[in-house]
Length: 339
Image 1: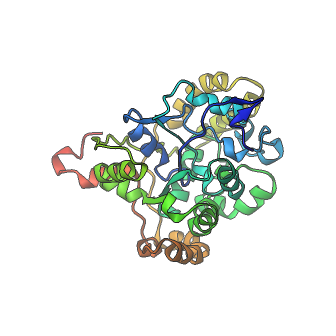
Image 2: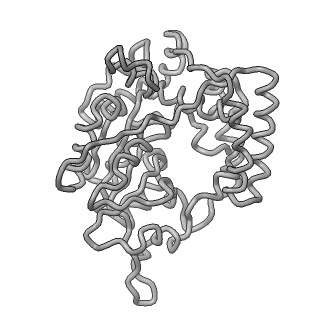
Image 3: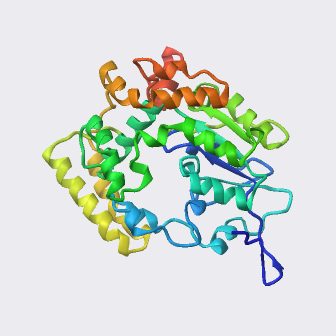
């Protein structure tokens, strides 16, 4: 899939680096912190998902979950459209994009290696149970997840995959980073991969962004402005919200036949209604956390072997909470009330 030349003419450059990891693991926050850094040009849209494709549109058969068919319209699958995302950038600019699924998708890793073997990866990892819970809450609060019980939604993951639901619904599997990184290292030298933890971006944003710039070879140090995560308020499970959520899912299905911006505009009042009277999500109990975590323990062991780092805190009975809750806990008491 080498498209650098066509008919003897030099085409635009491929990206120099990728931000990957998993949804709800801090890739959006890191991407936002790097926007505007001198010497770096990031793609817009943030997640083109190009290397998830193989020169063809993403197949409908693998996008049968609520909202999947609508979402697939936004994937950039033509090489010409993808390369055009960095049109006009000077030769000395580092080009990058942020598609978190590149860590999960083994074929995407192979495609990148075939085209950009010298590419660098910044991989964001988050406690896999915290990540799965945040992923579920995002979809539930936006009306797309029909299952109101998080544990039940996790149990449905395998059957949903067999029915063709997209990777965003893989609550556990997206957090099996050990096997994913092990495969990535088959295609790329570990020296080309910087593994970061979500907690570092939350707790030490300045130092974390500085480490990314050093890894990319970008001179200087920049004051890091890391935005809050995009966690939704937990919508209550009432007859009213269930009715609105059914409208959201029906609209998203119909939206597959309209330009994405049309459905986004139409859905705004429905989402406002869903988020009205929303509450903070409750913490998982130790028993709930253990049920989600137990099948992932072997992969955490693999992750430790692959990275040489300890992830012992992920084996505990309590998570570390949301981005906002952790940032507030780190602030002086006088500033905690500010949102």
